[in-house]
Image 1 (tube, rainbow, N blue to C red):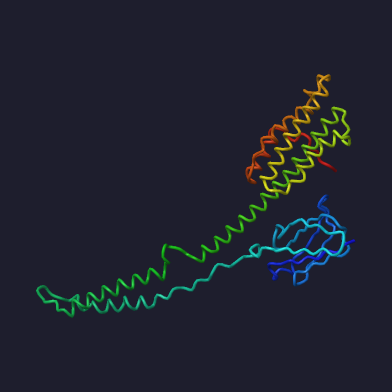
Image 2 (image 1 turned 90 degrees about the horizontal axis):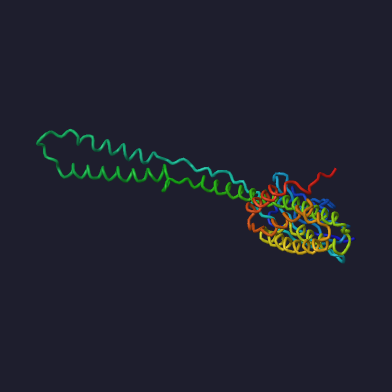
Amino acid sequence: MSELTMNILGFAAVNKDLSVQIRDAATGQVVKEAKPYLDGTVRVPNINPGNYEVTVSHPNLSLPVLTRPIRVLPQGPTRVSVVIDPSKFRNTPIEDVPEANLTPVRDVLQSVAETVTPLGSKHSGEAIRSDDWNTVVGSVLDVATSMGELTQLVSPQGHDHPEYVKKFDEITTNFQTLLDSLSSSLVELQRQIYAQQLRTQVNDVLDHAGVDPTSAQGKDFLSLVDNVQNKVTESPTTFGREVRNTGVQLQTKLETLLDAKKDTPDFATSPQVQNLTAAVDLAKSHVATTYPAELAQQKKVTRVLGTTGLSVKR
């Protein structure tokens, strides 16, 4: 038995509410659960050496804060440090912008009105003195200055509201993060289903051909499916490359099997062989490099193959 020590770094304020699950990488079964200390330290004694997946969760988040693979060494304690993203917990309230004080502007405009009111009683032919003209010009200047000040107080330049802009940016970022997480989780689930379907189709062909799955030839077929299964958590580009390679290799092995069964005329046209041939053709055309494109590719596979090879286990 070995000992695992983890250090959770990045945002100490949430350490007390975090929970850690350690799952067997092969079966997905939870083998250990632990709560970190306030400093983020997690100690897991008496754990078997091997490959595991660590999931860090928080009660306020629907998705895990962090998920990553680890390997527990067979000798000595294993020490692992993980860093969580503080932005996952960010929920900044909308900034409370103080109301603008318009009293000075109102006072200036009121004084302008009081100043120019007496000048409005001039009669026809009465002279306008330079003092009167200067008063009018000064009043117009005060009005213009006050109006300029008013536009700055009640509406920022560009008609912008920076407190709302910052909040909308934060909401958009959080939503995009959630969308990316949901997309990757959905794609990984679809990959698991795809690998199961492909494995069943290969087994059906081997069974129809009378080939023992545990024989060398059977293992050659199924090892290609294992390669796809082992890449379900990789990026769309990496997974797509593995699917295409698997399609090419499966086609070669299927052609060899067909040559060996050429004396059995119904073998090549059997539903088992036809289903696997269609799956191989789809695998060779798998070129998705993004999660949305891969979901579209999986929909295409479902339209062509249906649920062939899938079964509900009880």
